[in-house]
Every structure is written in C-alpha cells, then in structure tokens.
Amino acid sequence: MLVLLSCIGCHHAVAPVAPPLVSHDFDFNLGVWHTQIERIHGDETTSMAGTVTVRPVWDGRAQLEEIEVDGPKGHWRGMTLFTFNPTAHQWNQTFVGGSSGSYANPLVGSFANGRGELFASDTVDGKAVLVRGVWSDITPDAHRYEESYSSDGGATWSPAFRAQLTREAKTADAPAVVSHDGSHDFDFDLGTWHTESKRLLHPLTGSKDWVTYDGETIVRPVWGGRANLAEFHADGSAGHLELLALRVYDPAHQQWSINFSHPDSGTFSTPGVGVFANHRVDFYDQETIGDRALLVRFSMWPIDADHAQSEQAFSADGGKTWEVNWVNRYMRK
Image 1 (cartoon, rainbow, N blue to C red):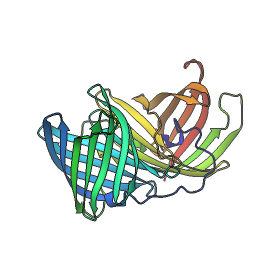
Image 2 (cartoon, rainbow, N blue to C red; image 1 turned 60 degrees about the horizontal axis):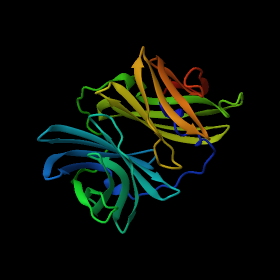
Image 3 (spheres, rainbow, N blue to C red; image 1 turned 90 degrees about the horizontal axis):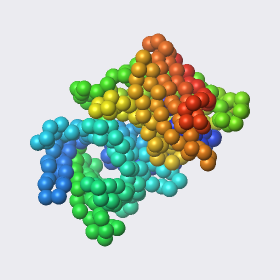
C-alpha cells in the first residue's frame, strides 16, 4: 500500500500511454561493488571505502543505488535513483543524503561512446556552480565516477568527488540490511498489495466524474527500512498508469519526505513532507496545477495488518477546506 497512487506533482500523468522506451546505458552499474571514494573540499581530501549495491527497479527502467562507506569521520550513507526520460533520451541521477534525507538537485544527461556526462546547477558554500557527473572507464567488472564543479560556466572544472568501483558479486537481489537509528513508521507498508483506486477527473470544479483503476503496489525497504521504494502499476477506465515513489526519513527532524516519478519523464516531483501521528501520516506540498497554486495533502494509514488506505486532496483556500480527489485501498497479497 503506498503513496504511489497519489502522485503529488504528477497530476497530469494519468492519460493512457504506450510502454515507455527502456534504456540500457546504466546496465553496467547493476550489482554489488567495492568502492574507494575521495571527497575533495578545497585542499582537504577525505578517503572512504565500502560497498555500493545497485538493483533494477520499475521493470528495469530505473535503478536504485545504496552506498555504505566508512572513513575518518565515521560511517557515511547515500542513495541514488537513476531514472530515464524516454522523450529526451536523457538520464536523471538523483542523490539523497543519509544524514538528512534531503534531495540534491538531479543531474541530467546522456551517454555517448561509452561515457556518460550529466549536469546540474547547485550552490556550494553559498556560491552558484555547475555540477558535472562523469561515468567512465567502464568494463564488466569496474568503472569510475567523478563529480566536478565549475564557477565559470564550464570553462574549467574542479574535482569534488571520485569513486572507483570494482565488482564484488554478480547480483544485487539481496542488498545488505544495516542497523540504524531511523524510523520504522512505514514497516506496515512493506510487501505486495492489490490496489483499488478511484480518481476525480476534474478536481475543484464541482465535477463528480470519477475513474477507477485496479492494480498492484510493491514496497521494498531501503537503508534497512529508513527509506522505501514503491512501484505501482494499474489499469482502468482511463488507461494504464505507472508510478514510482521514494520515501525517506529525516532523523534530525523526525519527518518523512515522499517524491514521485512517472515513466514519461523520469523526473521527480517536489517532495511532500509529513510526520506520523496516531498511526497516520499527512504529507503536504504546494503545487502549480494548470495555472493555479494549490496546496496538496496526501494521507496514509493502516487499517489492519492486511489492509490500508490513502487519499489525496487539494485546497485552493490555504488549507481551510479540502477536496479529496484520489482514494486508494490496499489489500495485502
């Protein structure tokens, strides 16, 4: 049962679509890897070593990377989700830091001649920079990744992160579970769920026209449960629908974030943020839908061990009133 159905930031992505194009550019990255990392900040270089586990998700159209390394400052954990935009023929590389659960600006780019280059804009130490991520030296059992910063529009680049990876195993089907002090609020949601959904076609218009879907949601743990990834697919009176949702716990603020991606774009929405209270979580976000700025609320709660429910609602009056426009009911398989 998952929040996948809601689609904060994906309200337009519900029309029937043909199966999306699949890219195999990142297939070399699947598996379990030993990694040697250098993080470079000014004249200081910090070395770390550990394990990177990469597994396919979304029927191979995306990949999830879990990073567990140790260095002089202790343990460091990260996560990267790779999603493909079939229209632009570009990859989106979205990193989530383990200490805060926050999302970095996604790197976007493509592969040519066995080399991948992806770019983003960001701020480092208060200064606006371009970020370039390069995948190179790719062989069946080794490859290299490097991030560099440029403050002169790409004329020159300074290395900030290097990783050399060598294969440890041929499969990433069973990533290691590590101990952590994060939240287990979403443990009830792990597993495979039959999902029945209904969606209001024209929210906030007085419309009473609903469409229905019948499908499946699969929720898998990440970082030993402190994050989770949900895959949803369904068919209904409005056609076929697929979504991917990543939920990450922020231990510093004891909050969860939720972020959605759709196969048409491979990009993520603006994260909704929420807190569990009384066995229920309400994620909130502001989105521009059409030409209107609206508040979006996505709520989830378990009913019992084998049933759960979620709802999405919009508000056009600053949260004074809410109209429910998506209802999802989950039955454990």
